[in-house]
Every structure is written in structure tokens, then in C-alpha cells.
Length: 299
Image 1 (cartoon, one colour):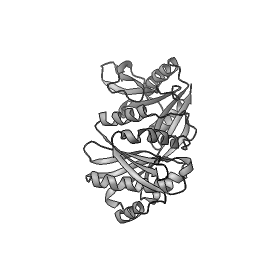
Image 2 (cartoon, one colour):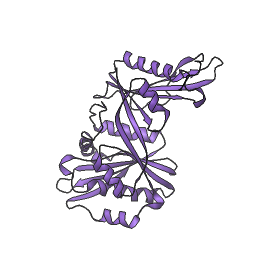
Image 3 (cartoon, helix red, strand yellow):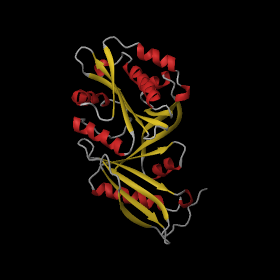
Image 4 (cartoon, one colour):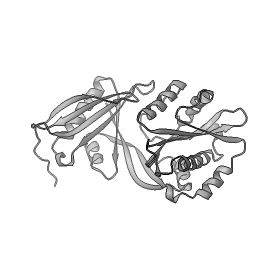
């Protein structure tokens, strides 16, 4: 039988988010009677068309202060703020083997998506095999690549290609539908740069009309060390089945090794109901590291 500790005196202080991005963000700090911090919570309020119904909560409590009601107070403040802002869904993430899963379940959240995380140690990358994959270009396509903001001459085509993400398997999460335009692409690239990171994009070009029909993005730490993180990889529906995803991602791996030789590895996460992208990762040498869940609560 598990018992909860006696609840301490908890004071919640609303803070100003020092670096908002991708929407407004509200932050709370929980402190004890003597002023020492116990935990924190943030609530991201998405502000783009198609996602104004959604908020994302993140609650963190120091291990020594758990099971005393601190997390519940913080989550309660976040949910109340989401309701007051007219949101209908709140999402939150937790590792499959951490305390967050039990906490969110106890507060009425349901698992809406399971994510499989994987890593490719660059020291183990099969460079000859990757090079051969890139050289074996699918008939009728070629690659292009850029760093940072998409070049002006490709911007409209790249924005149009983002519809490739519309049918990406996302479990039962109520993410809504995001419409990408050139301004949004430039804002996203600027946000990465403002964090001191480097955005690399590799895209597939249809030789018939010069349009971009697929892309893969990689965000590298500013110092070029540690692990880089893959963002989106997608191919527009009418160009699937030609191996473009594997081709682009192989090129992205080689580009990362060449431009950032101190990088240790590449990280990615894929929905467990997306077997095609998981197969791409397996083919290129990524190995699963852990599982996490996307939880959702209807307000």
C-alpha cells in the first residue's frame, strides 16, 4: 500500500516566460513556506490557426517533494488557465517508465500516442552503405539542401510540400491541422537560430516541374557536439513508394557527419503506428532507446 506524505504549505507564483515560441507560454513556480522551490509547471497555448483549441502542459516536481500534492496544485493551475483561455484539449508527455505516466493517468489523462525514440551513433554509421543509397537516386528526382531559412526561390514550393505532414500517423492526439506558409517557415527557422541551434534541411525535387515533393529536417546544437535531433521527414502522397524518405534521410546523415564532425549521434522519435518511417530508421541503422507517451485530456 502506498501513502502520500503530508502536504506542505505551497505557494504558486506566476512567472513570465523569458523565451516564448510557437505560441504563448504561462509558467508557475511552486515554493514552500520558507521560499525554497518545489517544482514548476508551464502551459503552452498554441496560437496558430487550426491549433487554437490546444494547450500543452509540462509539470516538474523535485523528487524529494513528490507525493505531497505539489504536482497536483501545479497541474490544477495549468488546467484552470487552459479552460479560461477557451482551450478544449490539453496534451502532456511522459516516459513509459517514469513517474509522469502514473501522475497523468491519476488526473484523468489518457494515452493518445505512443512514441518510439531511436538513436544513430554516428561512429557506427555505415558510411559506404549510406553513400551508395544517396548515389542510387530514384528515377526522376534529385536532392537539394540548405542551412537555416529556406532560400527565397524554393520557399513557395517548400511551403506547399508541407502538406506531406497532414496524414502523418499521430494516434488519437487532437493536434488539429496546421497550414504552413512562407512566413511560418521563416519564423520556425528563426526560432531555431534564436536558440543558437542550426537547422539543416534536405529535400527531394521532382525533375518534371522542379517542385519540392519531400523533406527531412535536422536540428544541430550550436557547438556541433552531442546529439542532433530530427524534426519532420515526409513525402507528399503522390510521390510515395519510391524510397524518397530513406534517400533524403541518408543524405541528411552524411551531411551532418561532414559539416559537424564532433556530433555524437542523431535522435529521432516515431509514432508506433507509423511502420513506414520506423522501417526507414531501421534501414539506416537507428536503434530504439526508449518509449514515451503523449497524453491528452479533454476539457
